[in-house]
Every structure is written in C-alpha cells, then in structure tokens.
Amino acid sequence: MRYDTEGVHINAHGGCVLYHNGTYYWYGEYRNPKKEGTPGTQGVGCYSSTDLYNWKKEGVVLSVVDDPNSDITAGCKIERPKVIYNEKTGKFVMWFHLEFKGRGYGTARAALAVADNPQGPFQLLHSLRPNAGRWPMNFPDSRKTALTSEQMKREIAGNNTWPAIRDGAYTRYNFEDGQMVRDMTLFVDENGKAYLVASAEENYTIHIHELTDDYLDLTGKWIRVEPSGHNEAPALMKRNGKYYMLVSGCTGWEPNDARLLVADSIWGPWKKAAYNPCVGTNPFNNMGPDKTFGGQSTYILSVHGKPNAYIAMFDVWRPKVQLIESGYIWLPIAFENDKMVIRWRSQWDLGVFNN
Ligand code: GAL
Image 1 (spheres, helix red, strand yellow):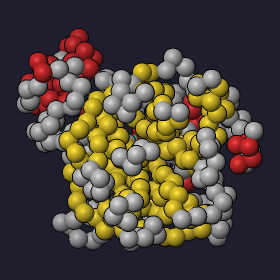
Image 2: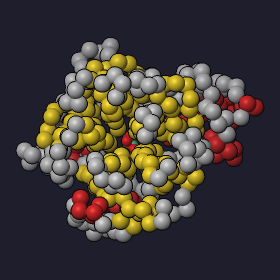
Image 3: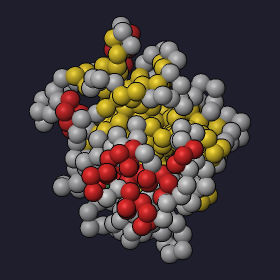
Image 4: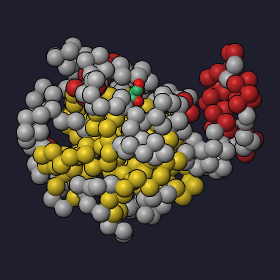
C-alpha cells in the first residue's frame, strides 16, 4: 500500500508520473470501492509531490459523466491514463485506453483529453481507433489488402494461428476502422516528438504511433513491434541513444514475467532481450522475476535533475480483494554494461542514484 498525505491509499493505478515546474504529478486509474458507484473506473486521479516521497491528493482530474451519449459515460472503462506536457501549445495532453460502457474489452479505443493546468480539469476531446486506412511502415506491400472478419478468421484458423497473426491478419482486419488500443503508454523523445505505444491486435502485437507536434493527433507513421509476441503493459525509456521498452505477458490481472525490448531507433528494429531485467525475490509474496515480483509494468519515471535515474513503476493488481486496493512497486533501474537490471529492494531511497 502507498498512502497520500491524508493517510489514504493512493488511487492512481496503471499510471504515470509527469514532472512539471518543480512538481511531480502522478496520474492513474481512479477506481471505485466495490459496491459503490458504477462499475469500471470513476476517472483519472492525480496526486502531486515535490520529493517523490510525499503525495498530496489533487483529486479526480477527468471524471466519467452521466450523459449516456458521452464516450465516457459512467460504466465505461478508463485504463492506463498517461499525461504529457506540450511545450509548443502549453497544454497538458492525456491519452488513455477507453472501453465503452457494457462492451467488456471489445471496443479497444484510445481517447484523449486536454487541460491548461496539470491539476486539470481535463476536457475530453474524443476517442478513436488509430491510423484507420494507413498501413504500418514495416509491412510488406504483398499483404497490404484489408481483410473482412470472415477472411481474418479463415487466416487464423487451424494450425496457422501464430504465423497468421505474426503476418498481420489482425492488422489487415483492423485496417479500415483503425487499430486496437488496450494497454498503452506515451513516450516523449529528446527532440519533443511523442508516441502512443499500445498493445493491439487482440494483445498479440505492440504498435508505436507517432503523434503530431501538438500531441493531439496521429501523423500516420506507425510500426508493429514484436508481431505475435503477446505483450502488453508497455513502459519506455531512452538512455545513451538506446530505447528500452518494458512489457508484460498477457495474463489479465495475474502477474507474469516481464520482457524487455531494445532498439536503436524508435522505428526499430526492436529486439527482444535474451534476459529478464528483474532480479531477486519479493519476500512479501515470494515472487521473483517469473512473476515480476507480483507486479505489472506501467511506466518508467525519470528523476528530474539526476542523469540516468530511472524508476520502474509496477501495479500489484488485487482484483480478488478489490482493484482500488491494488498496490504499487517502484524500483530503481540500474544498467550494468548496457544491460537493464531491476533488482528487488524492500526499502530504498533516491540516494541509490548517487552511487
Ligand atoms: C490486464 C491489463 C490491465 C487490465 C486487465 C483487465 O492484462 O494489463 O490494464 O486491462 O488486463 O483484465
């Protein structure tokens, strides 16, 4: 558990941390207590801190609404919200994974909202399926034909499922309506270019979509990463010109082994590292690298003013108790000869980055 300055468990799951003008803002899924309010998420919660230890509740910065015609009518799912700041427009831009009310995880959309202040309120602009009618840059011309649902099902039937997914059966099926977005993150590169990185193709393949300069739209440039790798929960960082993407496997709320993808360019090629970056065991649940200490990746935070100080943020989902009680594991990321190492520590402070 992690408590805010009022002693209440922090309610900001699947979140991110943005640094702006001396303050860190932690945004995440603001979940309802069981049996209270509507099912699904209530919106996006925000907490602020100047030291990364003490978190003050700022409130719900984007809330579901009563209007049944709104994309975020109460009962929808708002997951994995990410907020970035646009230097050119001075706006705070939020993207999140949205599922329409009553549709399970079937709608798989991205939604975006903007605010003038980090504490919100955020205004929903709209929701979408990215890059409808645009092929990924790393897709062979020979497969650039859209598939109907029947054709797609035929492609993935029988023994051919994995090769067909790898070769883009879902990409082609989703071509006309746009690609799916489930677990997602945003990543801003040193040159200010930002990217939406999402688990797509029924969670079989990660997509990287370039955002326009105002971060409110897509440029049309996008790629598929680790086709049929079955990865989700992406979290990115860049160090010494190399891009690192931490992902999880796909086992719902249950923990699994973290995987690491590495590239010299955001446009790839992305290679899966031969090792699991997690090392050690969480003594509170006896879970080691094969279960990511009981957590699932959500974001990599750069500590302001400290070069090479990165914190890996994980959620410890507790669906059986109730999701609002889900915990957090934050661990420092070390590099040993370019190899990412996330070592279990039961206790640590920012002093680890001084060594
Ligand atoms: C997980 C995902 C979560 C949530 C959950 C629902 O795989 O990482 O963000 O969507 O599934 O079952």
